[in-house]
Length: 549
Image (cartoon, rainbow, N blue to C red; front, top):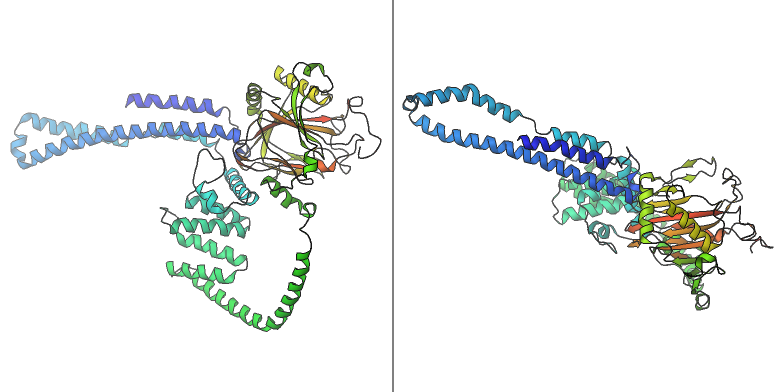
């Protein structure tokens, strides 16, 4: 027992060393990279729990041996009590047991072996994710469901593209997602996830979840979407399962009354409805004659999601024929003469290029190592107040690295200057970003628009003339960089970087560079980017004579 007690504090030390890398609470769901620390924390907690179990088992084993010994002894003794106690040693041992040994046994039974485990759990709990993280992760699953058009069963069974470690959701997990959607009055997703929870329960999944509770949420969500008949069918099932349900019978009567009311109204509207149907049929025929809606007329949100799914517009063969790959030395730049870089055209308007093998695996690991302790929830600039704040449409964490942090950062800055020909002294620090569960950054501009004259005033380096974006990981599914206005999609490829100009040579903003980071469906997405500013580029990229030049 003593050896077990001595092991528990050692586990505490392991936990403390692991937890040094975790902040008190830092939006865990917004960075998959930082969430890896939680796995090690949980592993140490399991180790502590096993130590507690071993201590309890050891204690119970001692009690069990004591009980078995006394059971045998008392059976023999009670067969002939006087004869048994006639032996003076037996009499002495009986007195000794009752006076001393039963007291020792009482101490053993009352001995608390939970101390080490509870202290470990207390230490860890202050670093656990909170309700905000759980809600954020749940909403991320719903976001992935919408963006990639996945049904609830596909997500629940874990059948996602590119998965390495398959994991399925329990009925309780599905129910939790439904409740979070319900709390946002999102009855569409409430229905999907409550229906999935009910499906799994109907299939015989063992669960503490009550079908009546699930059906109660499900019927209400369906009712809120105006489907009275389906809501009534589920309510009938609810009443069958629980005839004494406080709302079941009253809801059933209400639905029956409303359906009867709707039926009467429909009968009165029938003649008018026929006339409307005739007009709608005629209009439909006219629309069918027209060509398919142009990509440019589709709402931005829809275009963004289409591109994330790989359903964007395809270039014409003529446009594709103008895209090339080449070895590039940027007009015989000295740093590229002996080892020109591989460059390939990704898009023509705006002109987007990709540089292959521009950053090594060793450099990537060093950047991640430097950035990880500094990762903080990514922010956006409030267009009205100018104050930096978090936003639901940007789910990631970022850190900023300078050449003073490591000589490697200076090497990377020089490399960017070599391939782009642009001055790096006025560029922003290297930003490193890691995306969280369903991590994304919805459509945005990198440059300051005319209605944001003070966007980068404090830097004193002008507007963001260009963006250089490094991909520091491959992504199993999702995570593309898309340009909704033009239909371009650039997919992550580890060790590469993409580059584009945000401003025309005239200094005017190129609004076709509005872009977004698609939600990460499966995998861990790490990127770093360099925002290059106008100051210092006067002789490197001279002004154009026209606004769009």
